[in-house]
Length: 487
Ligand SMILES: Cc1cc2nc3c(=O)[nH]c(=O)nc-3n(C[C@H](O)[C@H](O)[C@H](O)COP(=O)(O)OP(=O)(O)OC[C@H]3O[C@@H](n4cnc5c(N)ncnc54)[C@H](O)[C@@H]3O)c2cc1C
Image (cartoon, rainbow, N blue to C red; front, side, top):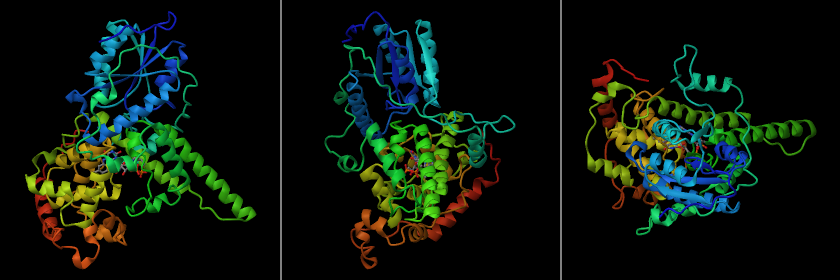
């Protein structure tokens, strides 16, 4: 039942449509709506139409916590988060009509989301409702073109060109006051059943993450005070707390890349200043962090690069960017896929990664590369199977980063790793988990080398050398055909 909202004064409300930007600070759409002086309706729509790739289970779990947090933050302003379910084109247009809103504000998205938004914009304009859109979720909106005007699809020139555009704008504070609108009908979040109950597979995830904007800010602060120092060297070590773990927060826009960029620069500047002071005046030495900050921000740059790919190839979670791979002789092997998903391949570093994913909804980047390479090269299973599994199990499952990274590992993506580079899992483990702490944490059967391949832990499901040769032979069958890239 839709109730008629109680109008605050006679002013028509402004509608703010939240999507992957579940925060109050550095939210230009919200800030602009508040600035109009009109009462504001804050809306989130659960749109499960196939064109938008419905969220996987772990991401739905994250979304529930993030919406709860946003709702609580708005309540402190005496404003509500209105929840609606259905195709966004209908839901947003309907609420605009019901509430008499004359403007809808949103932060722009890219890929299939942008297509939906363009159609909605037309519909709203026919209804006499204007649309105001803003850049909020990437530092550099795609396409970032090169000298010839063509979008850059090689990372290094992409990031160099993007950075040459100048420093990203400063982040905005959260609005001091939001004048909400009372009485707008809303779904009940619990009714969406975003979180598991029986079985409750999210218990360990709840203990690992603090969903929502405050959790994101806390994580960012801790990272800048802690793991940022040494990031450039420690980021490849899954056995150490060496990275930011901001990915799900960035995925759902609980923190913006502008906030991350500026606070990282500030932390690096402060550290350099302290180091100079120590060198001049003595005292406890603190390492300057310029190289760490630069490396960390280049990872934010990879995120931007993935969004450029998504913008240019909205269907790239199902389509090889290098069309030679359309003829790749993938093997269909449900049993092998299952063993990989369950972390029972007999390769401890692969299994540790897959179990970390299952238990916590996240996996370290180095191990993501190892497990993805294993699926695609050792098992010769189509990368799309792995991408789909990650989509369902990652709390940071991202429409740009996930397909881009899978295509990168498989060798068919933009600026991809060459197919013939086949990771040796044992060497990867030796290099990046030298004491075996990471493997031990997730594959306790691996406690002592003698008992490694005991009753409860399988022997390696494929021989590394034989698998490598098989992968190279498979690649040879497509290598010579024209690349036929479409990007
Ligand atoms: C097969 C595969 C699948 C992946 N799927 C996803 C995904 O669905 N969602 C996702 O956010 N990342 C994905 N990544 C990229 C990367 O593994 C994660 O972003 C990173 O591990 C998250 O941890 P962090 O926040 O501690 O990263 P940090 O090292 O602290 O990096 C900071 C931020 O930069 C971005 N970032 C870092 N590395 C990359 C990268 N290689 N590509 C794009 N952005 C990056 C992320 O937003 C990350 O939060 C995938 C990588 C691989 C190899």
